[in-house]
Image 1 (cartoon, one colour):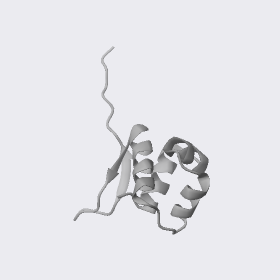
Image 2 (cartoon, one colour):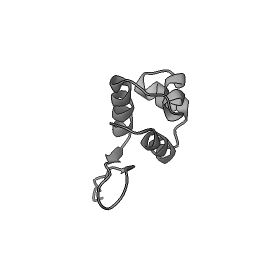
Image 3 (tube, helix red, strand yellow):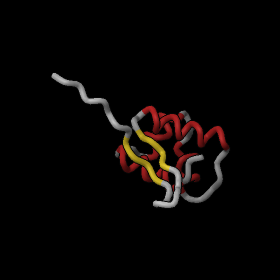
Image 4 (cartoon, one colour):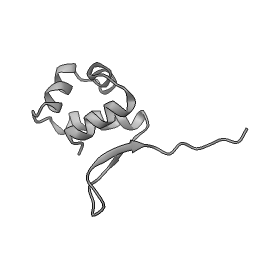
Length: 81
């Protein structure tokens, strides 16, 4: 799913506040804060976070032999003018 660290990283990358994420994910700001501060969240809530971030251009990176979990921006297609 989405770790609390990834939520914080994605918010920072997008320059989103807790309220911004809450609005985009359709949850309360308290839900976002509680999850980031260590309280477990339901699977549906984590999927809402993920969908909100992915819609904004974030990709989630799973841990592998080269490093830990993280986030990055999707590669944007360049148009020729």
